[in-house]
Every structure is written in C-alpha cells, then in structure tokens.
Length: 218
Image (tube, rainbow, N blue to C red):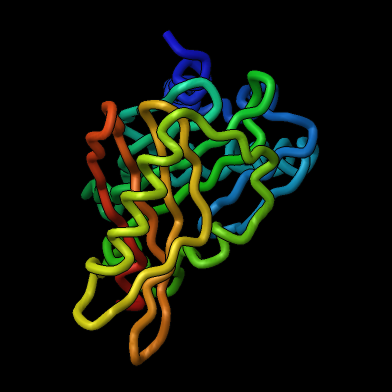
C-alpha cells in the first residue's frame, strides 16, 4: 500500500471516534489545511487549534462523514466523501472532496471542498468558499511520471471544454504523480468567474476525470 494512501485513509478513519486532533501528527510543521468555511489554517499549531474546535463542534451537531474513497500515490492524492448533516431528524448527505500534497511522508497541504448547492439547500445563510483554495501555499511542487500526460490533457481541454455554456477554463494549480492527480481551475464567463477542481485517475496515457465546481456561481 502506498504511503499517501495510508495517510489519507487515516483522515477517513478518524471519523470513527471524531478525535480530530489525532490527525495533527500527520502534518508537517508548516502545513496548510484549507477548510471551506474557516479558510486556511497555516502551521501545525493553527491546525491543532482548528482540530480541537472540530472535536467540540462536529459531534455536538451530529455531523459525520461517510463513503470515504481514496486515490493516491506517494506525495499526491485525493479523497471523496459525504458530509452527513442531520436536520430535524433527516440526514442530508453533502458530497465533498479533499486534495492532498505530502512531503517526506507527511501532509503539507490539504484542501476540503463541499458541494455548494447541496449545502445551500440546508444552510442558505452560510456558504463555503472554494475560490481561495487554489491560492494557498502547497508546500511541495513535486511531480511524477504522468505530468506530461496531464499537462497535454489540460492543454487540449482548455480549448474545447467548459462546465457551462460559453465559458472558458484556465488552470490555477495541479498535483500530479503516477496514477493520481488533481487540478484546480477557474471558469470565466460573461457574468463572472467561478472556481472548479478535477480529480484524475491515470493509467498510462488514459485519464479519467471527475469535475466539480462552485455551482452557486454558475
């Protein structure tokens, strides 16, 4: 089992007891953790403070995470999950994704995304911020053997694809290794820009893509 997969899987396993501070040991001292509601937590001390608050708030709300799925190599990976939010006895699963970079066997960057339209249906007063996640320090720019494959894939894609009609897409950042990759991008439209992100599985020159974007802005 590859190192990044083992570490990223532990983020899912911590949901068993919701002791989020157990994750702090997995981060580098200068790591950045980007939460879609609280923004960037920079440095291990800030991440510990944030995780301590999570231990108080999340169980009290009855929120839990389910259906954890991981794709990773050694220093790049991603995960998909559902954030299940109970309201008036009804559980609402909110799809979400996380993207990771590792350095020397520890997480130096992670950003969490949640599906904005799904969340808006239960909490219209509080919206996630996906736009800033691409701008924070990643702590590692290491790539793998699939860099050329993903670069060519997106060079072609930016000329022919948009998640909405008459939009154009530009790449903001990417994490690429051998079998796993993620890309953060911006879609430009006549009425404004909105952020998006794509999760990739790679098998030789074959690339599969799962595209997500901030639907509240589209």
